[in-house]
Image (spheres, rainbow, N blue to C red):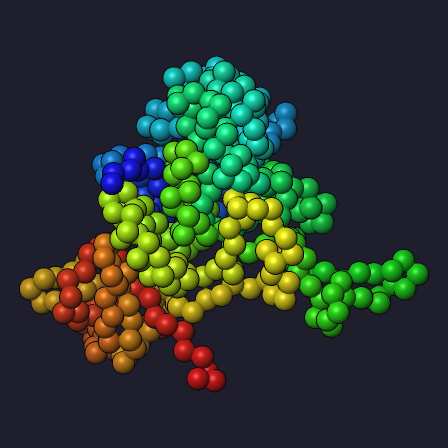
Amino acid sequence: MKQNKPELLAPAGDLEKLKIAVFYGADAVYIGGAQYGLRAKARNFTLEQLKEGIEYAHDHGVKVYIAANIIAHNEDFDGMGEYFVTLQALGADALIIADPGVLAIAKQYVPTMELHLSTQANNTNYHSALFWHQQGVQRIVTARELSFDEIKMIREKTPSTLQIESFIHGAMCISYSGRCLLSNYMSGRDANKGACSHPCRWKYHLVEETRPGQYMPIEETSRGTYIYNSKDLCMLSYIPQLLDAGINSFKIEGRMKTPYYVGIITKVYREAIDDYCSDPALYHNKLNDYMEEVSKASHRKYTTGFYIQKPGGNEQVYDSNTYIRDYDFVGVVLQYDEKTKIATVEQRNKFSVGDEVEILTQKGPFIKTTITQLWDEEGNTIESAPHPQQIIKIPLEHRVQKNELIRKKIVSERA
């Protein structure tokens, strides 16, 4: 049984993450330049980095979409058209836009460029999808508040020239498709211009007007409660339903996440999609393996969001705003000498001789090995690699590739 493969769209908050996403199998990446995107705290891309990143992606057959999805104010339009012309000249494959005014500028300055309508535009029905398609939009990113049935109806009621993109993994926003004023009100940072302070993850108590300073828990606990703190989306077990709904592009959330997160989530979804499209039985047999792997990335408890039914009280994490993290990302392979069987690695978190580590291969199962020796860049024997981005050498019997990631299980002090 052969299935048409959807596009796997991965996040890339900086140039390194772009290369990791490409390496682990993304068909396309979405990134932000220095302006007009909704991840102002991400490192984002300078024009020079945009050029390098787009060329790198295109050399590997991967598309690059640029986020310009702020809800714009008057002053935001200064220089916007010229910026879009520059992006087109650099080879960007599409702009991701939410604001009608920004769309008008894009159509004026880059009329031949592909335009995608961001989830920020609250795409919840086929009438609005048709409207935006008539305005020149080639793809809509559905609101996260839609079910399989609702997306399927949008697909059935719109022409095939309109593509549908939907989030399938990552953090969920408590507000409607990210259109949030909570951050602006509580911290003066505008979520709709890329500066969200994530007050949905804060701990809250009630205070009664005549009892200032008396903090009453919203639930019966002295610790307070994280009433807005959603679980993370994970649709790995629903690849068939996502395809049946007519979704063309499967989008992973996470431009602010680590290279390790981008690598492992991209790799697992790449494998799951390929397995299902070539042999559905293989996909179903490996579901537990897929879930075990994505759970090795930092995450909150998982949910299916709105896809199956509207979330109830169980879709929030009330007792903590921290992530579940069982593995440390400890290194990136820079090169491997097949004659000496020595890998050159850039350190990301401390590891030492005697540690058991796992190498996240580009394809296939991870490699488990024990660190028997370490050398620094000058060839001196060392017992551990404690310094951030330290260049070290490790003997490895298994052949590894540049950009493969190395992780280490976190051992509890109480274990």
